[in-house]
Image (tube, rainbow over all chains, first blue to last red; front, side):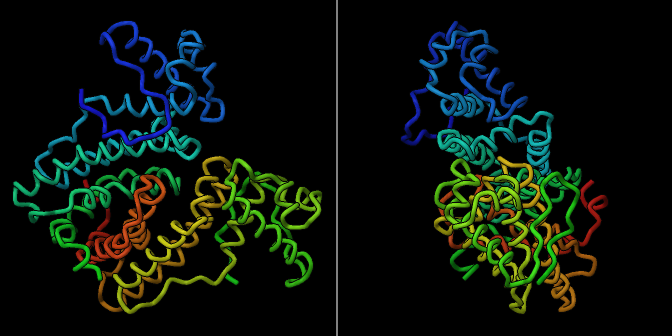
Amino acid sequence: MTPAAPRPEDDRPAPPPLRRPGGRTTRIRTQVLDAVRAELGEHGYDQLTVDAVAARAGVHRTTVYRRWGDVGGLLADVYDAAGDDDWRPRDTGSLQGDLAALNHEIQEALTARPSIAAALIAASFRSDVAARAQRRLWEDRYTRCEIVVSRAVRRGELPPHTDARRLLIAATAPLYHELVLLQTPLDPHLPDHAARTAALAASAGVFAEPPSDADL
Amino acid sequence: MTPAAPRPEDDRPAPPPLRRPGGRTTRIRTQVLDAVRAELGEHGYDQLTVDAVAARAGVHRTTVYRRWGDVGGLLADVYDAAGDDDWRPRDTGSLQGDLAALNHEIQEALTARPSIAAALIAASFRSDVAARAQRRLWEDRYTRCEIVVSRAVRRGELPPHTDARRLLIAATAPLYHELVLLQTPLDPHLPDHAARTAALAASAGVFAEPPSDADL
């Protein structure tokens, strides 16, 4: 279990305690969060209610209200649960390969039918609690991906002091822009192409220069 | 007046006729769309109703219902009106400068308080009609920006047959990703840095190669 990203102060209820791993508490959480994802994927945020989730999960509605509070609390816990995994970026042996593998994962998640990832992004525009949980998860994912950059630096592919976050944003942003915001049809070449663009700029040192000197 | 992007078939009401430019029809449209933007910026999509828009615009509600149908029709017309301008990307004399100027415009629009652009993006997750209108507007904007690339090709900055859309997406996507999806605090260097990254990759020919050969 990898700890989720640091949790800033917020107004949502405390996360459900993870007593007795594998026990009843864990089992109920799994059932409830599976139900949230299924409801969200099938019907979207507008139909998402604590009652529908409880019914689908086969859990008493008061249990859900007590532990998660409301739909925002449920969504936030879906994000937190997503961060409680041991996900690591693939190690393909090259920067471009690693970035492409990451982009293919993103594209698959965003174009699945139904896409829970896309439904969660849409929900983040409806619930501030969900939006904060999404940011925590994504920042945690980008942090985990920094190893892609440090490996490339060690291999001599990149200059030292390359800004990992900027590089990772440059590599992955076109996927989100096309698939989430512009909603253009899937382009099977985009994951590789965006990876190649970022890797090439990175090799040229674009992400190693202090922005204040390079850009102004 | 630049024509808006081609209008695909959809299920929203016909746009209001633009009889007698400068006349009553045009004036009412201006008042109503100003009211939509103001309501959206102040209160967001959840509070946006035909009645609130009519009251704010000082127009009878039946006029609004008759011409725009519903909130989706109002939002779609806000997008269409935004496309009815003579906006052109700035000509700074260099590819990187042009892309940076574009990114600064995007960053300003997305970080204005209130940001109508950000509110419209959020609304596009609520209304399919608004989402389609947003796509039309953005595709029209990217089309208008192709001149940035053709100028750079003419100056010898870029190889011929550079894929303008891919380049423009690479240059602008990090702004939307950071400010709309990740909601990270404003980074004053990002517009220039993202422009520099895309311009450098473009100069190296990344966007001139057929993706099928370059990436697979």
